[in-house]
Picture 1 (cartoon, rainbow, N blue to C red):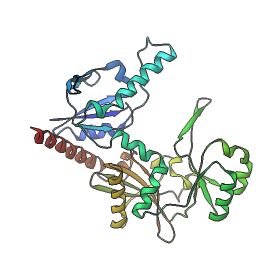
Picture 2: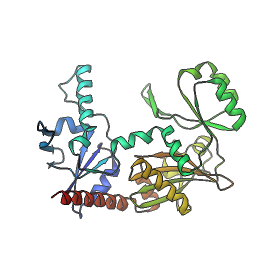
Picture 3: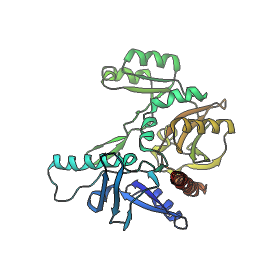
Picture 4: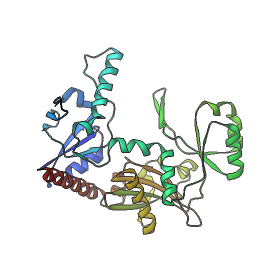
Length: 338
């Protein structure tokens, strides 16, 4: 039996369905929810002067699970860590949360032999989208012409050369205003708009890309050795915002169709994961009227279960098989040391 540690939050349906699928395997899933970990988790990790691990123990009272060793780690979607109710001072709250985050970010030091679905630190690098560009260039993967700048003159020149363009954040996902949550999605940009915001362009980096005329839009999910190509169609929705960025509406309102892309292209996406040391990746790809495929971005920890719900593609099974494969690798690594 191999222990699988899932670091996530209470609302994570992906963890729910994979845990259920693991019931008849030799994997013991241990779910660590960020909202309850501080209040219900007990642990100790002790090292000798040599650095050898002397004693390690983790107990999660919420799920009645405990373990001395973790063989596989699946870093999913942890939320903010909730502190004990008696902690009121804002600096004390910050201290408790940041120390707990530091502990979580140190899992590779606590369980150095564990295998990861995607290692936390290997997720962070491609999460900053500019880091994906050199790898795409190395593998011969076409991207839309792209500009990052804080210069009005550079944007003006780029728009003149590229024509219709879009603007989107590199990382910032949204903000809360007057009790309402707002998202930051892809939007069109033109010369009139940048003239209006000319004086504020210098305040932060601006990320622009040439707008690609969409013939088709794909979400390509790679899980272990399996790949799933889903064509997502929003043309039937009479909404310019949705047509530009389908994330602005509910997935069930969009048409999701299992599809295929050329094997040579899928191989390049697998090679990108190899370059990054990842076992999972969710890719956004656009096909234009000339059938050119444009790589938009890789989400190294993206959502995918909604696609299985809407298409029936067996993605939960693929994740379970990946975890089983990693557990086997972990067991073999232990055997080789004996």
